[in-house]
Image (cartoon, rainbow, N blue to C red; front, top):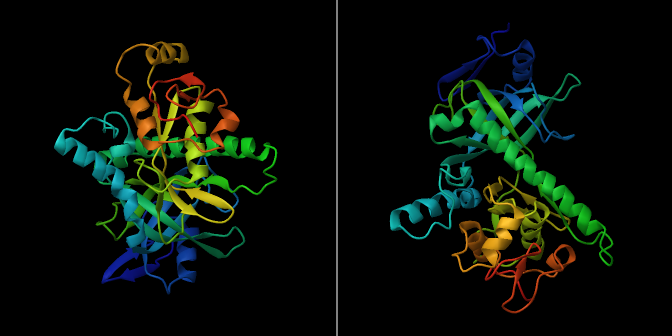
Length: 328
């Protein structure tokens, strides 16, 4: 195996260790002008695409930095902390309920990988590392990536639904979830970022700013992300609630990064109906739906035509009093 050494701030990332292939070392030689800080291997990639890294791919990371415009990525964990400190009603999901509240750190990185033709390609991405070591274990990170992949599946169904509607003729932007993958850290010289043996999430996302589209209900109302939010609950039969729709908006698409999928619990539709017609206090997820989606977009009616206007409101075809999904 080669003896390539890559220096950074008097530290050295050497290829002379087990777990890094000669291919990776050779790749590093061709980009020696860059300071390499981490060596990673993709270990779970359910969202593989033509421009993404694939299972088993090894790559090098350099140019690790914070992006001021990405601060909204941390807002959800800040909201949960505030909720816990003040004792307010549990609108924000707790750590026991969802990864929504899991403390994460975020960096912009440059990834160098093989182009499959003997050369090197570079990709810019978002590297997410859990603050707690226990949350950097493989199964924890795989579960997060699997959840993001499930939201991407909903996005494909939503885009297909919109494309079939009369009068749109392809003029409506699409919803796309940025590709995420679980990566095992082979070695590195950036202990303040992640340690060898940890697992992190790499997402192919190269935007200057992150915008909240559906988060706490006070953000500017943007029709397509709100329609998608409503669609997920409707399409899942009331079982899934997507949270924290954030990312970037372009003329032809909305790119969502690190969305969270909440399960409504063990209630089936008949139980939801029974609860909705009783005098019981609305469930947490019904409160969340009401707060995060304060009004429906016109597009919501295309898949949930049974909803009513006025005070007798319907969400996803199920009558839910005060669900916040009524009238136009």
